[in-house]
Length: 390
Ligand SMILES: Cc1ncc(COP(=O)(O)O)c(C=O)c1O
Image 1 (cartoon, rainbow, N blue to C red):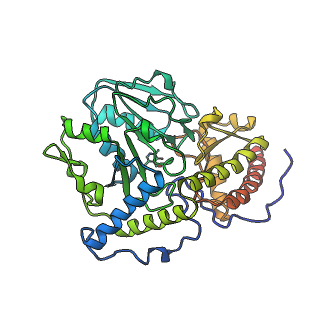
Image 2: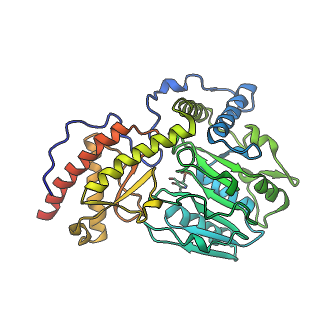
Image 3: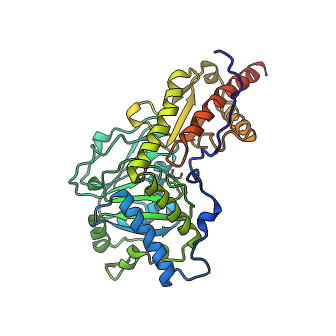
């Protein structure tokens, strides 16, 4: 490999974390000036802010009018668990997992809810399970975009539009920046801290009419904490879908979500966000194609995430290292980038094989990715030589 020269410029915004993700371009704390602080979230003003988040999200995502949206506690984890705890148990469930988050939903269902009629479909990092084996007469739970492996489902064509069970998807690193086939899904969750570059704390739970119906006819056999109660006396709590949250939300985080949603509208809505994300991904993909030392962790190009881009070090020398040495190499690599102010938080997830993970979602600027990549070559070459002589 030719020894690269020190790159001339650094990314203006070195924020490539896969969550919390980069704030939108131009964000400053001033964006929160209009926050409804020191007021009750049940005041007219507070409720209006919460309802506005739901309305703007619904419009951006072109949600079918009969779907309902609620702001729930606990970020995306809260939304997913609320769905699993409230909806599962009335029929068998097919659980899909190909990275850390899918695995954690699987273990929740088996070890916490202790459901017995569970079929597990698992695949190692880099691959998807066989989607043709899924039985949609059962409930189905999967992660749309596996943030820790950079493997996503290629589309929704494998899900029949008409299905007896409920299709539940954790779409936190996909919503807004990848198209979602609402007509094939029943429950979709996300948090503001991913594609919108918002703050964590709250999750969004989107429910189809069939999911609402299940909530009303199915009473789980396990106790339900107050935080998870969507139903009272067999009737769904309608107020939830108009911004009456179960417990107190952060109106600061709500203001920030509104700022992100307005920005998303200003760049062309969902289509604009997808365009920005795809253009970002292309920058990384073009670099991977010409760079011998990296490869996508996702083997099948159709499954490559356009947001959480996970890369492995494909140098044969790297493969000879023990896993803890590989991890150390990656940690040192990421630390050097951070110290230089070139990139923050691009070491792969702790549960994934040692490698890099670069967020390429819409709040990242293409020019910043273009500026980042030569630094990766430069640092890699230096560190590779240092590791070889040590
Ligand atoms: C696929 C997936 N699910 C769930 C989560 C957890 O999200 P949160 O921390 O917002 O609850 C993450 C976070 O990275 C994720 O990537």
